[in-house]
Image (cartoon, rainbow, N blue to C red):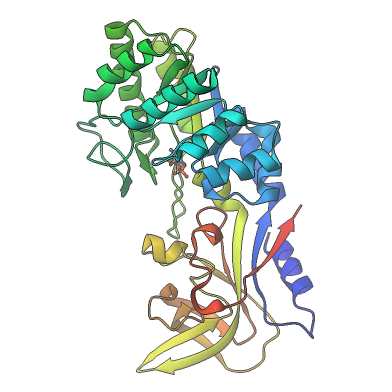
Length: 392
Ligand SMILES: *Cc1c(COP(=O)(O)O)cnc(C)c1O
């Protein structure tokens, strides 16, 4: 892998050109990864890709044959996904959808609307009546999670702007009964991200199953779909103990055999876990300096391209590829890796041991394929964007 990365970097670094600053996406490994994910999924389950993790055109094209559809979390994403993949099944979630976006989603025949509130349900009922069009919906629910450990990024199990309070389920179902244009198709849950523990995630899914079965009995419901969200995590520490998808799928198969779900299909909409590992952010070292006893390496780029370490408050893992050495070098010394921004927050990894590092070397940050370039404050300081390069 390092060899292929080095080749790609060197092809961008012809002698006359600027220092390198780029994202590299390994599409071949992305395809292998999603194929491996699919190969262990139990029967009656589906995989959607949550495009907000990385909506890059070639990433979407690589994933399209391997997933049942894409999840859009905004009107903008929905437009983009429809434009690039009109053939794909699209689902539309996220709080605060505009009426114009709901109408445009109806024009695009989205597969399901994930309804976030009673107000949204009212808006959809009205649109459905005005247009005389059926609106297939899943109700997004935020349920209490007694005894289940929350991850560091929880959207549910506590007060949040996401999903309906179970107290509102009664009103929601009554509204649906009054509006035959609203086609109730199931429930949707997405309670936490950054889940690294397969067992905890199975407990969570078990709770979804039990809760939904209770509602089905109480209200006499029939669910074609149970969307259990995403949230499978990536371990950004050196240990790299990522979510154990295969172990999780084995447990899920057992769970699904125990719980009688009837014809209900269980759907995932994963983002980070699908694309994080295919991406690399590369900065060429522009300067190395000592300041008040500490060493800093300044790379071509920074958190305005790669906000992940700042957003997660972590030291991002990295490795050094030898470049065209052009000046000051250090060895066996802790170094803080920073970018070109005029803010002390522009740190990608602090006080990291390195063997050898010189101006002109390449700092390569792996696990940069999800929530990286597209969550970054790219316009701050008006630096040029990174190049984007694909390995096939
Ligand atoms: C962001 C999001 C996802 C994907 O989350 P990951 O942690 O990237 O898997 C899935 N569903 C919803 C509703 C989301 O908002």
